[in-house]
Image 1 (cartoon, rainbow, N blue to C red):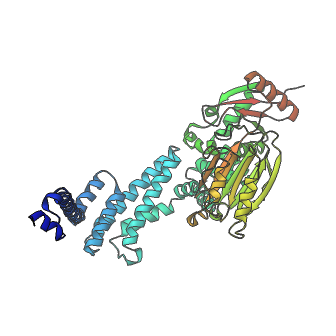
Image 2 (image 1 turned 60 degrees about the vertical axis):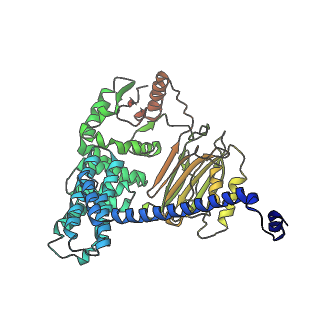
Image 3 (image 1 turned 180 degrees about the vertical axis):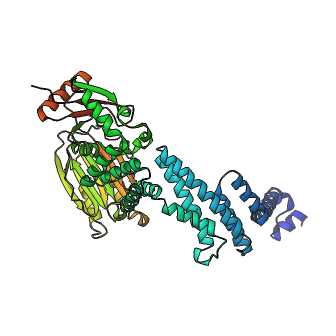
Length: 485
């Protein structure tokens, strides 16, 4: 028997027949071994890199660079990491205290300067950064564990901030903490510090919370003490011989209060009309008819506001100045006919108290005809199931109170059934929220038509009337007084 035959009979495949397959398996084994070795090497390198990156000396270098760039929060976080590695607070406390003091002081001064410039969002960001820095420091070194005099400067600085009524009053107002804001601004007024400014802030707060009696009182004091009263009086006197007189808003506002006028700009037309009404005049305005980017124009005036328990606790929906909502805890719901502005439905859903309200609200919105205007206002503690977000998206919204950490948030929507997500008017957040659209106006758009309308109304109503083309200082005011018949 030949050699190949013997091998075949013994069940052994000749080398000439298995060459290619054996080579492929060998290549695969080599590749796998190389791949495993590479992974092990990379893991080791990463581990070494992490250890190097976390060396106290490296972290201290990064902290110094953060300090040099003015990023006190990042520097503090680097020192917190060093403390966790070294587990020894004593050597680090002086440096961390210095960072906290310097950083908080700078954020505080920037915040005050931004408030005076009318840059309220940026001012609140600076105050928030100061408090975050304090929180980081006192998390590592609780105040009750610190011994004087090491921390005297830092605690004195924080006390100075808390004692600054004019500063804290404005900060509380920007955070929608109305009760705290009122108290601190009243203290500011009594101290005769920034008196006209404090009174303007008080007017703003009372207007937003619809405390019209106190809003009127604060407004009258503001007009008297700011010099605006004499400007208005002169303007009114010079208007006697004219049917309609026109001027930019800034001509009626003292220059030192121009930066604070942003407060007035943030009020709704409804709020402004209520204030003007209480001064014995009537306000007309162009308003805004567009409901977000839905392509639908409001058939009537719609105002919605929302707030959690700590920031006002309200959920109102007004149609042409009349509150049609239940204004109770949960989501207050209103449906309006797109063409006539007629109220179609109003209800309130409180899923926290009644879980079945989730599905009820879902069915109510789902059953509305396409094109229906839908208004939502959350009041107090509110939470809904996650699938209700899809229902809200069907009216153009993008948010719902689905998360436990948002129970106290505000949320309001003016949307349209069938509109794409993101097209509705919508506002939500930790503070209070407000939305407004205005229905058709019957006094025309041409200035001659508006002036004729104002003259007629002033004579009919026997009182001055004004028309504001907008809320900014450079917008014009038209003023008409009753004419002798």
